Image 1 (cartoon, each protein chain N blue to C red):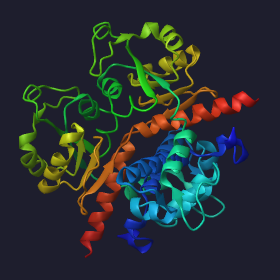
Image 2 (image 1 turned 90 degrees about the horizontal axis):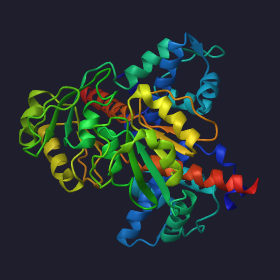
Image 3 (image 1 turned 45 degrees about the vertical axis):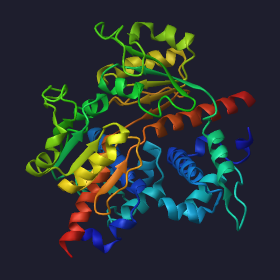
Length: 222
Length: 222
């Protein structure tokens, strides 16, 4: 509730939230190295970030640093954990036990901290009953609603083929899931009360393509 | 070379480049719907973007819009394709034929436009020789250098276990790869002339966690 004082959550962009995750990673590394205090400028220099951006992003959520001294690394890390809600348990369901769904069900990070994969579902009867790496047994997508309710699933990850993604999304919303991470290449019609995040892995290849293009252009004129 | 007039490529952030990919997706959708001209404000409103940010991002690369009229959608799309270097063929190698590597080798987007997966490698002799979905046959990682050179690989994707990632990265650099996308949870010691992008999928779960936390806080006070 402390956050309400500063800015409504709807007006904070996904890019800002993603940067909070990045700052959290940086602080964890600094703490691991024994750093106790750091300024936004030092944080920026060390991790190739923007110090004004860091201050602006954090200012949405309160005043954390001490002017002229900087941030207490452990305190700021704890603030970020709280802001991101990572102190709470988040039960995650994976729908689609293909290669991507199977990979995500034992991806480091998808089963750490508060995140816990509680089930992986598929519609293929040949997959149902099989054990995937990480230890879960694939269950039938026909049990989706029951599993969401019984295991109190918060977040669902969609890794089904794109032509099934909308149907799965609608079932997840109906069953009471509050947030969905969609890896299917489908433009889903979202529900206003359920947070939907589409993941587009191609964007990373395009980033590399950009640097390849411009590095070689620069190289070609030197 | 036209880009050099505006700003050195090193000073353009990854976030800016990622936004260019987002603008490209939006323009493709608009063209698909028959839109021919759009202002930065209309583009922002339609896709929940920031119009000032759009203008700033594009200004790095030239003057594309017509004041008071907006952008020609097809022309701006073509500019973005050129800026991102997507008109060129990019040969991609996947190292690690586990679930994630296998998934990426036939992920929609990793084999579209100019991107072409030319090989998938693994160190496990039980995997070598097996055909993965999409049609490629897994080859031995001991042939990495030869394959990079013979198939003129531009981009490598690392999906090996984290304790092997540095060794694979070093071999890729030595073999002449120019850009690396790393999915392994390992802090790689990078080479200054090889663009390295670490992908952290947990960031997406943290984003959803943020919205779950704040949505329920807001709900609890209404």
